[in-house]
Amino acid sequence: MLKTFLINLDRRPDRLMFVKQQLENLGIDFERVSAVDGSCLTDEQRAVFNQQRFALECKRKVVDGEIGCALSHQAVWQRMVAENISYALILEDDVQLKPELASLLADSRNYESFDFLNLTLKRPFYDIDTTAVNIFITQQEFIRPRLWQLCKRRSWRLMESKAIVRWKIFHLHTLSNGMTACECDIAPSLACCYIVSLQGAKNMLLASKTLFYPIDKVWHYSGGQLREAFLVEPLAFQSLDSDIPHRVRFKLTLVQRFKRFFVKGRHWQRLFDVMRMYGWTRL
Image (cartoon, rainbow, N blue to C red):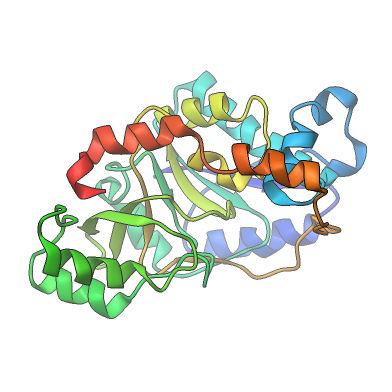
């Protein structure tokens, strides 16, 4: 069975029991990882974030809970590297799981094609036309059309257009449990439930040495031609109130807005990697 890590604060045994009961009902063994508590951070831990750049990217200050969350995920990735763990399922303690998760994990072919597979979906920011997906699968059209395939390309773009963010679906994968995974860029944010490869963990550690964005966007900046994907029908949802309060946006000054124009956006390395993986004709 896939190695499973559950990130949980020591002061939240209630949340531990909430997810533990679900995992036991699904027959999934797990290891609890003690989360870094944002209420008692050191100056060294806070230094992981570039506060000024974060303000430009997110129009708000980073809060201590976000720092603790980031350090907790990094700790799991470091475990994967230290112990040479090929793939791992990583969960946060506010997640509601669907029963189909067990069948997904039962066959390693469902996730070993990807370096990052997000099992949750933050709608409506990330969304997809499921009817269109089913039509493409019925027609055996699994790969994003090329630039000159105008009619097919238009239909493919309509499939993606439900999302608020601008993204691209490159490949549809039918899984052994009847579900569909979409290989994409950018992969949906939210880090409450995902599967990551060893290579993905290594690259995300590199990308998060100095953070100027929440940890659940680290895969947007991770280089190395990582294969990223999500499920058309998510298997996990954040069902409890967040333990990271006080994320309040503010209005940027004129100088900050000027700086933001030049720095806002994903890392260019990821864009080049996507082009190398899929070819410029599929962008």
